Length: 430
Image 1 (tube, rainbow, N blue to C red):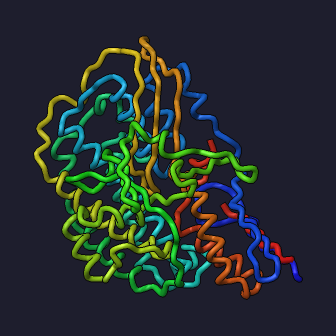
Image 2 (cartoon, rainbow, N blue to C red):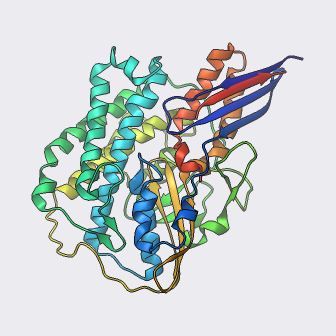
């Protein structure tokens, strides 16, 4: 019986470094390992002993693509520990900031990172020769997201304007109004982008996974809510650590995660959010989902790019609504006094639910920090889906099989630097 190995040395068009190892025994898939070999970054240890006010700026450095997610989860957790209640206006502006991050992340991924896989190109640059309008559109959408993060966050990368209690400064109404024309164009462009990707040819693959995301009765989940699962469970954020368990695996510097009650992995991210919260998408996004006949519970991870498109439309539509508001608040942040306590928060990063837990003392110092990024939570489910996918591409030539494995990993848009507190692919046949 022939042993066969498939190995991808460097995964492109993902954030960070890692590898994929597949070992086959004849027609049997014996082993699939998503190997993350970036060194641990030890952010949780860095936070211990620091003033709680440092958490938003330090955690923003975990990721250059989704710093807002880390800031939002950290400040919400700190506010819970301190008993701080933010105003509705601050809450809306934080959602606006989050819309900016979703726009720049989804716009980049859809056009330059994932679309080349469906159109047969090695990179976004190679794709630009035949699809210049689409690539330019993606760059313009990303720019819009960056502009919004710059306006509310103080700068486009690693923003510095978010603080415990609110913001250091809230821009004037005229600054918001300047963005409206671009975002009106962007909403139409996001709709066209989603129609475009909905027309791609998608390989057949059905993931046997449990979808998990935040859920909120009145809005599409971003900043708050309870955990909702496709199996019907509703989990309070305070029970997060009782329901989900991180595990160390020998082949990865990133932790894996499972449901404690089932011992099985689960899936976070756009596909889970849309599947569980479709009725709370913006009107244009809901209408578009019906127009393109996006299935009520899509289980094909290759089609996650369509879910990202629906969220892109939602982000533009919600951002426009907030940009057009009066913004009369004169209090950029709430005051607070130090007290010992524990705070937890989960928010929806572009790639899925990001959980933070902090213990603080009476002097406002961080005693313990626990950060669980979405990519590390998704890794075990990615391996399960890869195993099913390898069975479908097992007869392909080595390089083609490796490329198809890369394509599937990119569908999850993994942020590997976040997960190490991709892609090399090895397929081994025997």
